[in-house]
Length: 390
Figure 1 (tube, rainbow, N blue to C red):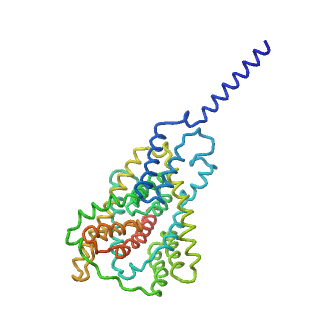
Figure 2: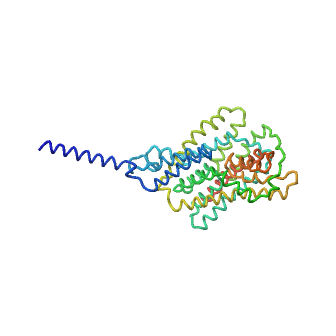
Figure 3: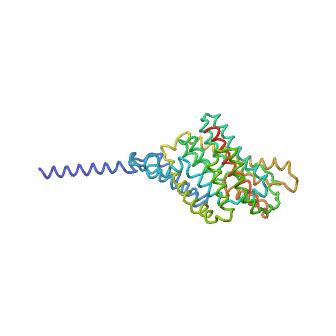
């Protein structure tokens, strides 16, 4: 009798233990949204590896989606939205905007602004490309988004992931995952989205325009630029200081000639580490319960519209400038798309499309002018929105 009771107790204990274990597994907690987001994460990884679409961004983001959508039982302190979990601690860099300024430090340290300094009027293209931001802001307001949400969505048009994260963390942190993934997705899809826009708004004759070689920029100009650039931009938009300050500081490290070791660290090791953490945590923030909402679809649609407007505005601004330029100083409008802040991908697209029509017409160095201007422009636009809305 005692043996039977002991056996029964052990059987009950084993059964209860198995039930408890099953309740903690991903199989027991899985919902359809988890499956959808796992497939999206795998798709991002496929795009990065097979199609070579911004692998340094899409591999961390895609794998982060896998991490963030493994089903689990709440209260285990492992999810990215659970206070005290490791993922939550790493996510603070996104939520409180720590990572974007560090990325901008690296961008400044690895960017040569010579093409912009050699032809300063290219700054106009970078400025005009920001129309996508303000156009999307107006549309978002018109369809019912709150002003803070509209501002966060609009910045996607700058095609600048770190800027989008920084601004959204200040204006609408609850939308951070959707906006960050949207911004980085469109950055990665620049080779797919921009060429049709460029062809639509240019003629064959315009695509064949050959630009004069840029003048040589002196070392003194390169050193003075980040100092003057910081003062001019941040006196106008002090709210952009975290991004613009780090951008120009990184560039001074590069150009000063006496801080090579610091410039290399900022542009390599530091940027790589922050990119890994940023991409992974942004991907993990797409937890299905937080991410799969009707509002997310609206964000992606508006972000796409903003990116199209920005690309078209850059191209059309060149066409308008050419009306006032002498024949031998015309600008090829194919570099207008580079006014968005997707460095250097957008400039490469300008060059590739130009070579399709004339294999001897290399536009890369010319396109880098509006491309780096777009970095400054998107950060400045973020500062303007933050000043008005924050």
